Amino acid sequence: MLGIGISIIAALDHAPLAQRQFLFLGTLLGALVLDYAKPFTISFVIPGMRQMWGLSAVSASYLPIAGLSGTMVGSVLWGFAADRIGRRATLLWTVGMFSAAALCGLTLQYWQSLVACLVMGLGVGGEAPIVFTLAAE
Image (cartoon, rainbow, N blue to C red):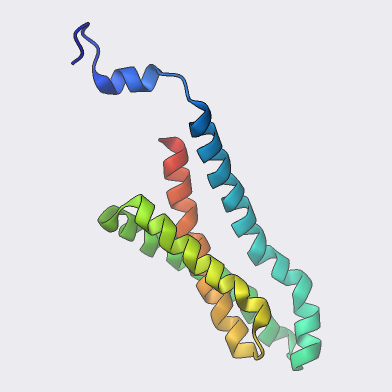
């Protein structure tokens, strides 16, 4: 309790947001928007990949499925990791994972793209719950 009968938590809850907090929030949300745009842009690339690698429609559909499956699994796994090792460390790991998987445009074979999409999904799935939690705080 502070000397005037207000707890520190209550004082922080009623304090206005500083400019650096708005900058931090904007950076987090901007990164999240960019990260979520990546899995959807693959739909524009799939026709070229099908032609280049001679993929059937079914084989090509596994690429976005891998990304979305990774997102689902990553959100659960990285959520538990954030509770264990902290949000900051987990956020850094997920951003690093997503950034490494963003090199999927350099893959030369179908299976490499499939793995890159899965890893990208794991990173994006882990980033979203952490960003939303940090934004809520």
